[in-house]
Length: 281
Image 1 (cartoon, rainbow, N blue to C red):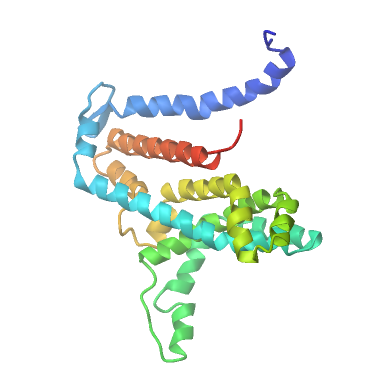
Image 2 (cartoon, rainbow, N blue to C red; image 1 turned 90 degrees about the horizontal axis):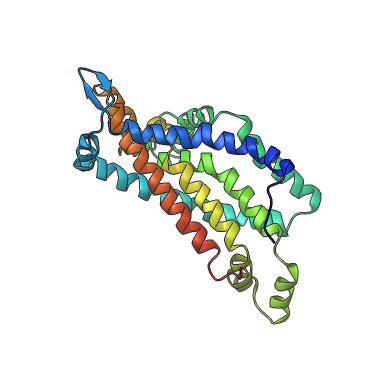
C-alpha cells in the first residue's frame, strides 16, 4: 500500500525539520561557501577560490594538529569507556533500584555546573603549588609538573565525558536479557568471562555509541587543551582560533572546521556500522 503523509505527522515533524534546516543545513552550506572566499586587506570578499584549501592542506602544522587531535580524542574515548564500564556495570547489576536512581542523579549533577568552571577547578589540583603537589610534598615527593601537559588535557577530557559515558553505558547494560547471564553461569562460565563473552557483546551498541560521543566531544574541545594543556600540543580547535586571529582568515578557519565535520561524520558512520554489525534487520 502506498504510504500517505498525514497532517498530524507533518505537523509534529515540521519543527524538527525547520530546526535542522536553520541550525545545521544552512550554517553548513554557509561554511562551505565561506571556505572559498578570499581575504584582502583584512576584508573578506565573496569569491570562489580554492586558495584557502590549498594553503591549509599544504601546511605541515595543520596535519600535525589533525593527527594530534585525532589521537588524543581516540585515546580519551578509549580511556573514558574503560574507566566508565566498571561504574556502569556496578550500577546496573549490583545496586538496588533506589541506589541506582541515586547513582544516576549523581551522574547528572556535574552537568549543573559549567564545564569551564570544572576545568578551572582542576588547576587548583594540578598546579605546581596545587593540592596534589602539596600532599606529595608532605611525604617528601615532588613537586611534579602536571599542569600544561597532555595528561592534564586528558583529565579535562574525562571531566567532560565521564558522566555522560557512564549514563549511556548504564542505559545499554540495563536492557540486557538477564537470562543470558544466568545461562552463562549455569554453564559454569566465570564472572569475568561472562562479562567479556555475554555482557559486552550484548551491550555493544550502547558501548559503541558512548565511545562515539566521547570522541566527538573531545575532538572538538577547546577548553581543556587551552586551560589544562597550555595550548601544547596544538589541536584543531586551537588552530581555528589562531587562524581567525591571523589577518581575519575566517575562510581558512572554515576549511579546518569543515575538515573536522567530515572527520566526525566518517567516524560516526564507522562506529554505527561496527555497533550494528552482524545484527539481523
